Image (tube, rainbow, N blue to C red; front, side, top):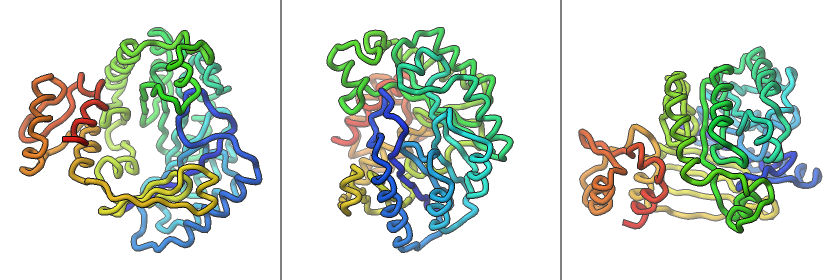
Length: 358
């Protein structure tokens, strides 16, 4: 069964680490965007009933109740097997949580990033660990049965003891799912741009280096496993049975339809992508591309800890790359299955790039 992704690129503030196509926009533009989004969803030719829905952003948790209801009402298949909304801590009320449940939401992904106040403030966020704990209680009381917490390894001022403090809060709060991302350093975020320039704004001078970020990630893998949260994808950890059903569609090349700015769709054969920016989307721009699915299968399947079972043609096509990484200890092979080693996970982008060009 297919899934649905809804892109809502509007935020209350732009976080220093964020490299997504999201931000703070005028209210009038947000209203126009919602009208265009609803029109796109309503005009879609539904050839299947979706089993998962994912509202990402941006901060779709900030959607007004009537707007959220209208968007979800336009999607068939309710009650969905899984319906996720991304939210920023610090703005969740009991009424809001109950409204989400009434609309069919049964999973909330909280962009916590850190439970340490010094680190939080440098990102531009305003929550505290205690606020996160209170809002998780509100979500539980509203019968939200699945909660994900995002953490970032590599924030400004982060040291091993503060990283372990954030993991201590994971133990206290007992979420079903945790996502751990290593900070991406690129020109698309303010912090990344500052780090590349060797500057000091946004606390860049106190950002941990690559080796420490990798060490933090490995600490998280071990600690989360001890809490029953097993790594099933490079950045994702879950209690058995609580893996993100929607995100697994991306990694297993299952179909999904995306709506909104920078949203992607895949019908099993062809990929389409909406215009990246809000302005372009409102002007009706759309791009279409056909990707080499053999190479893509390696790219996405190796993200999963279960790995990939290549067919004969794939073994032959990627023979040189496979041998290279097996010898380097970045890949492991057993019973016809290839998977990243623990070391390979830390340099996974280098591994993936080889399969996209081999």
